[in-house]
Image (cartoon, rainbow, N blue to C red; front, side, top):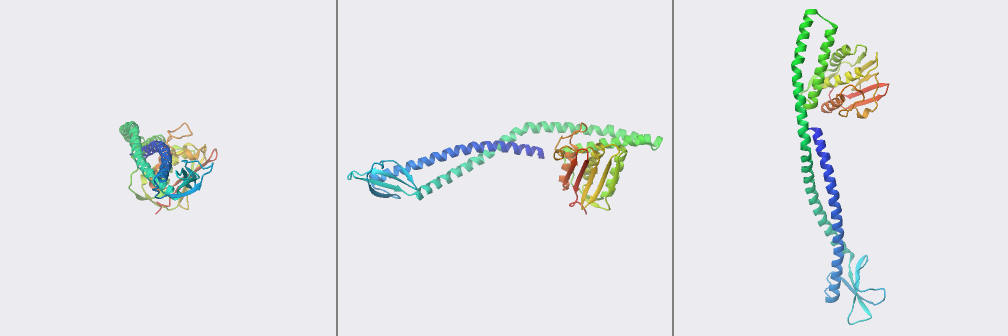
Length: 348
């Protein structure tokens, strides 16, 4: 099950479970109050039996003078419970039966423990029901997503034949007429299509786990050479030094390609892109349009321009998380954007 499916399952489960827990809590609270009232009724019955049978285990008895404010057979509560009862052989006196507060609290504690155990059992059952219901509700969505993914995979696979044909014919054409800038641009456009295809494959399949050592400077220079042809009016500045990385090279290349592509695509005319390394932070800065909501750019399908489909930076964030490379973004409208990659965990 993929991350977004797990997230959907968890959120659905949480909603169902919280709803059931609230209903259970209300029901058990009312039940507990009724049982507490039942305990008080039992205490009064025990007092009456004590008065009539003189079997008063756990109770205290006394005789008091009969007055108007002492009503018979009424349960009073003032710390301890007590009640007054008529004495057949003494009209001027009443029998006072007292039930200690400690005994009452002990009975309430046992009642609460029993209720809480029952509530816990019902909560576990509610959790199971919530999970099954959430999983069942997710099944049609998962089926639709699988169909969509299979459709995209088939399209990506079908792209391979015409793209390979174009690459072969361009190479043959290049042999016939020699080096040509227009052919170079066509080759770069094909590489762009392949890069987008790789992005979609990563989005659908996930990230390969193998690592290798490579030079950050050589990789950056190679990718900048590629983007210089696509964006000839942009000036690229590289200051990296001899830095070696140990990570998945293809995945890291996808990160650079997406960031450099955005830096060129959304830059101003005759703008600049700076690629620098300082204190193990790789910085990619541009003089472009900037971003209105930097906190949202890593969300899937979010975009502020008409171009693109809004998954490039989402894939960058996904790749960075997999490679253990924290990423930050700083941007202001009309002032440019800076992307910071923390390479501490992958620098050799």
